[in-house]
Image 1 (tube, rainbow, N blue to C red):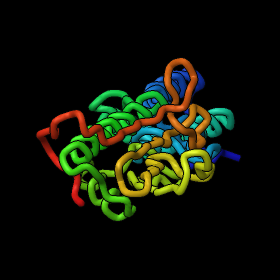
Image 2: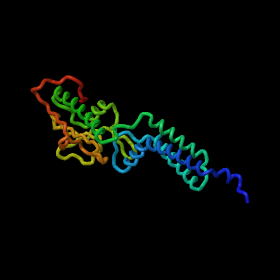
Image 3: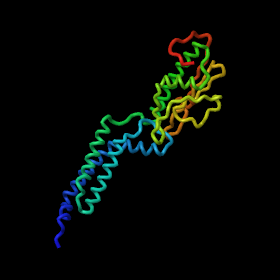
Image 4: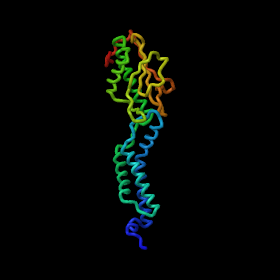
Length: 248
C-alpha cells in the first residue's frame, strides 16, 4: 500500500528537521533571555506580600509564553518524525519580534527594596523639611491626620509609591496618625508615614514604613540598624524659616 500524499507531505528528512529544531530553539532562547527578568519578577511577586518597582511588562510575558508553546509543538512533531505546521514557526518568530520590541528600552531598574525605600525616604525627608518650616513660622503644626495627608498629597502630586500588591496595585503614600511613638502599629503597609504630634502641635515625629528584601512591610532603618525617625520641635530662639508651608 502506498502512503497517502498527506503523509508524505507531513514527513521531512531528518537533517532538515534537526536544522529546523536547532534554529527555532535558538530563537526561543533569545526570546526567553529578554523576557526572563519579567518572568522572575512575576513569580516573586506572587510569593511575597508586596513587590518593589514596576510591574512585569505584559508584552515580554506573552512573548515568552508564545515562544515556549511554539517550540514545544515543533519538538514534539520532530520526535514523531513530522514537520510542524508553518504557523508554529511563525508564532516563535512573532514572539521574538514582540520580545525585541518589548525590551527596546532595556532592563527595568529599581525592582529592589533599596531603590524603593530611597523613594520613601526622599518623600519623608521633604515632608519633614516643609513641616519644620511651618513649625518655626507659626509655632505649631496641625494635629489632625487630614491636614498631614493633604500636605503629603501636595508634595507627591498624588503619585503612588513604587510598591505594589500581588495584583500589581500601586500603594499610595499615606499618613497614619498614632497616639504614641512608643506604640506604633505593626500592620502599616509600605508607603505609610506614621505621624505622632505632641498635643498643641509644638513637636512631632515621622516614622516611615518601607519594604524589606523579602517583600514585607518594614520601618526604614539607619545604616547602623536603628529605626529612622524624623523629629521636629518648635524652638522660640530661632527666627521663622522662610519657604513653603504645609497647610494648616
